[in-house]
Every structure is written in structure tokens, then in C-alpha cells.
Image 1 (tube, rainbow, N blue to C red):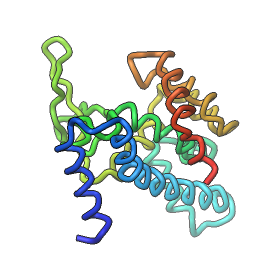
Image 2: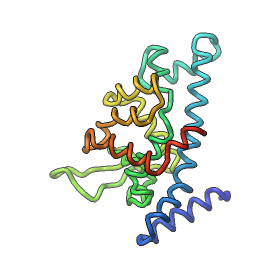
Image 3: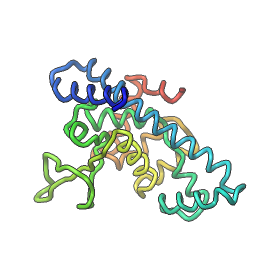
Image 4: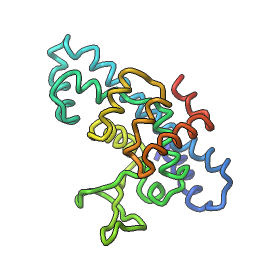
Length: 213
């Protein structure tokens, strides 16, 4: 186990055992544990988007990879693929992670590395049951091997799900997180208030600074 994995293990243990830590301590632990993972995945996706944008109509050698990506993202045209590949601003991902994981203290995060509260509808998924039900139905949440896997699945979910079509279209026109979060009302039962909550989270915690790096 390398140093980084040891550090992650220690931080997760700290979060698990320290239910009464202050808000400031929760936020600091979150910054150390979650933000590097989001940053890593964002950079991976941005590099991929840049490569595809450059080679999409210039290289037959790259054609096979592009076709594979089209199958993964369930699209047929080059334009649709680029729309799905471009990652949205880090500030939004960080704000959603903070809200959905209660600053990396939720049971879903501690037991399943599930930062964004992503549900599972496939019994073959690795998953855990939520502590509540919808009528007689059990709510299941996906379980991930690593934090990075959770981040990758979150970005892929927003890139492929029909409910976020307007969000994807807008991110091709602007990187303004305050405009983009207004298109995420389908992510939460809060509806339009969810975008307002994300805006406040980004502004108050200065998450917008991560979009400038």
C-alpha cells in the first residue's frame, strides 16, 4: 500500500470514528480526501476531450477509439460525443460531493465510497441498501472500489442521462457554474432549490477557485 492509499485509509477512519468533529474539521478532511480525487478525474476527462476534439476528423488511427467512446456514451455523431465528453466545472462536482456526502461523513460514503448518492437499479451491481424505503421498495446505492470510481461514474451519469440534456448543451456554451447548476434540478427532489443550494455552496466555500487551476 503506497503512502497516498495509507493517507486515504487514515482519513476515512478518522471520519468514521469522529462523529462529533467540528464543521471546520469536516471541511478540512473533505478537502484532503475528496477534492484530489475530483481533480484527478477532471484532468483525465479534460485530456480525453482535448484529444478527441483534435483527432476526431483528422486521424483514421484514432477512429477505433472514437467509435468505442460513442458506444460507451450511447451516441452516433461526433457532435454528440464531444457534448458528452467535455467535463463540467470542478466547482460543481465539489459542491455536489459536499452536499450529497455530508462533507464525506455519510454512511454511503463511509461504507460504499459513494460520494454523490448515486442509486442502483440493477441487482447485479455492487451496492448497499439505504436506511429508508420508498413505500415497500428498498432504495439501493452503488458501491465503488475507490473514490475515483465514484467520481468517474458521477461524471458519466451526467454525460449520458437524458434528464441532463440541457445541462450538457449549456456547458458547451459556458463554464459559469452559477448558470450551469440551474440545469441540475432533476438531480434532487429539491428541484430548482437544489441549484440555489449548489450556488450558495460554491460561493460560500470559494469552490470557484478550483475552476481557475
